[in-house]
Each structure stands twice: as structure tokens, then as C-alpha cells.
Image (cartoon, rainbow, N blue to C red; front, top):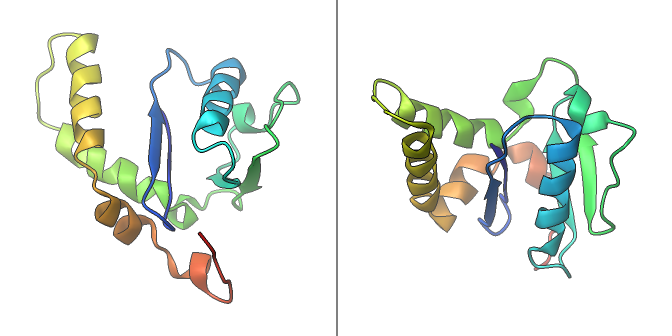
Length: 132
């Protein structure tokens, strides 16, 4: 599951892929770049090897910012993943299709206001002026 969540406007984008590797991450970035293509996107990432693969071609409307090593608490998206994981635990799913359906439904339930409140870390807004 690859996803991004905007603390600025509450937008969200999720793409379910079969593996977490550079090839699938490239597909995710390419699809993300097509969402509101005139918008410049800043994506906060951990230091996963596939995030830094030399084979990646970052689209012109995306910039990647890498967090310090071992600091997932600085990534606003981790709070969204935690919400989804809490909803997921202690449930029985009989197939991967049911798992996929669960996450799609949970993702759709995330409102603009919820995304902004969960991802609106102080460091994102301090000293910066954002425009629409």
C-alpha cells in the first residue's frame, strides 16, 4: 500500500501494489504526478531502499524529502497508517480481496478534515507560508 496525505488541503492518494519495491514505487509516483498535475507535491519519505533507488525518475511536479533515519514519528502519514491499522486488527478476512476491500473502505472514510488534523504537524507550518 502506497499513500500520501496532504496536511495543507486534506487530499489523499492511495495505490495498492503487489510489492514494496522501486518498480512499484515508480508506478505510484507516476500516478501521483497525474493527480492535479499542475500542483507541486512534496512527499515526505523514510529511508527505505526502494525510495532512494537510482532507477527512480521523480516526476517534475514531485519533490521527495527524506526524514532522518529511525524517525517515523516525524512522518505525518504514519498517523494515518496507525488509524488504518487499528481498524484492521482483530478482524478476520478470508481473502486478499476482503483485505483490499477493507482498506479501500477505510481510506474512503478518511475525510478532508480528518486528514488535515491528523497530518498537520507543527513543523510543517512553522515559519512557512503556503498558498493554494
